[in-house]
Length: 143
Image (tube, rainbow, N blue to C red; front, side, top):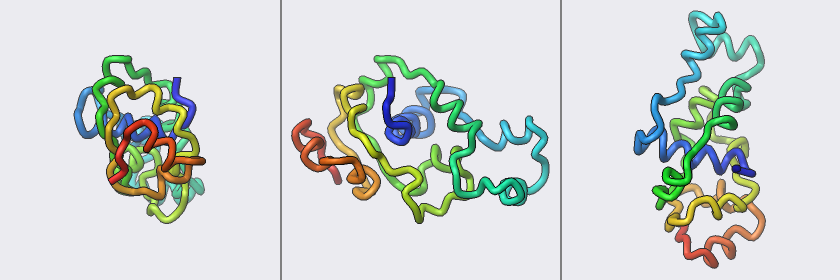
């Protein structure tokens, strides 16, 4: 359904972590502990060279997560911010200093018929080609 994984993450953050519509919330620490990662999570990720990447377990979970048309229709605003909970679940120690979560396509806007605003982080959304014009044409404010 979604073409841009990072765009889907914005939707998931809104529905799972902010509005609490999708339950239970995904917690990467629980998944890693179930795999045998014990103790200091930072040390585990450092030793496996996974500090600044999307962890495969999170990518798989969020890619496979189904979002219903009713849930999509309820999304009227999105937030882009380096501190989003969904980003911490994908990459717990990501520092926001790179383009790991930049959106490269706005094709998925069609999935959100009631989206009216995107708050914060112009850079993350504006990485998509012709983003400003696409959003303006759809009547979506970037604040």
